[in-house]
Image (cartoon, rainbow, N blue to C red):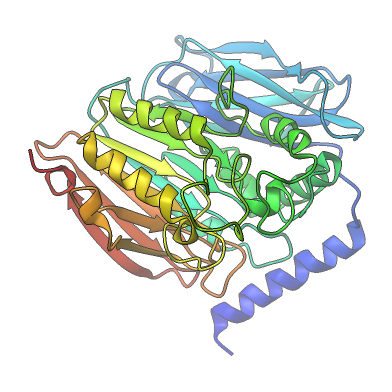
Length: 419
């Protein structure tokens, strides 16, 4: 047997054994998790017994011994009206007055108790709208009981931020209590926990963590799923005042990210493939196009769990009107620098969509799927350099064997429509 495969199987057996012993009981604590991070702030998330006093100490790395500025201490606030029916609740705190491109160390205390597992570090984002060089890690399909060693490979790549695109757990229900138990179980996995507490994380759901397999906007109880999802991650505020959903936008330096909810307003997969079939719903689509039109960022990243073409029964491929409307809007508005990220299919690749003529330049799709639920155990890294005269984006696909299986680079001029 391949030695690396033997290691993976041993790890899998270890986690499946611990899962069987633990059953479906949720742990009392989970986290910490670094969420939405800017050039001056960061959200820290923690799960703990309801009523527990939580506090956090932090300091800039150079000031960890108590010298200089950049130290702080805050109390966490529990979320109001938790969607799940558990003994614990999520707590969140926002650290402010931070400095750009600065590493901070932090330590969470629960009931006055300090535990090394409750500590971590993170690096803030570049100054807003400033040219920068940074590395994004992209994952999806993260299943408990499967080999988890690819998280170690991901951390070794030293990403500046991590975006995960669905199937972050496989509860296959809209019941938030069951969803939370699956989240908590997976967040107890040491390899995954190490990523959560040391890298800013942004998450979008897909079918298995939204509801049943291939679920859509008709899913009963989806409102409960949405409440629970928003409480269980450290994302920016989702949806709009008039349109609910998990979708949101954030920026990292001069790159804008549009995280799309491909489930809450989605037409059923088996609906007729005509001009009434929707992937995003009209309001979210308009939100996206307005955001792209108004963006001054060098690159605009669209991210969703659903692939543009590779899924034959649960992706944009069977939503022809919705897909063409998206491509045509990008082309007609002369929006340059668009890149699409997706997951779902349990394999990873980077390619150019064959209908790119509708966009006016090569439309790159990065599919990153199966970091802990596939044969390849793969993930993607995306390196942005917007400091160059002609900014670049480099995409690599890394498998669980540690080898790079794809490495491609584009210049911004390659992704700009002809005027």
